[in-house]
Length: 112
Image 1 (tube, rainbow, N blue to C red):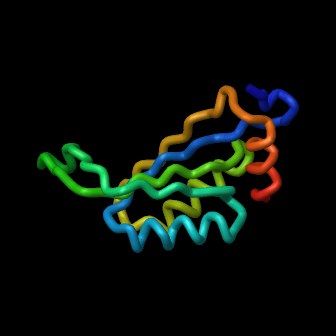
Image 2: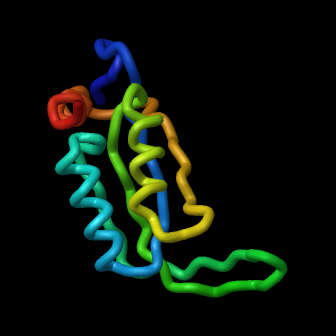
């Protein structure tokens, strides 16, 4: 297994959910076109159970798995908030701690 230690900044996996495959595709396309993400995987519908404004919700959502690099996170978050219709969108970033050096290089070459 390769390492990303040769890079100056880590890659990130940003998670976000949305209520529609069409909206997910629109957001994914914008983030990749704008080079804020190298790739966005869109899951099959998942079931989200959460409480919002005192009411329990059970909704079908699409999970977006957004691959980017740490140096782009603030710009990606800002852009995602402008594209996302939710009042409070889920935006959670996790660092890649290990993985294929070739894949990390690909993420870097496909982002700003």
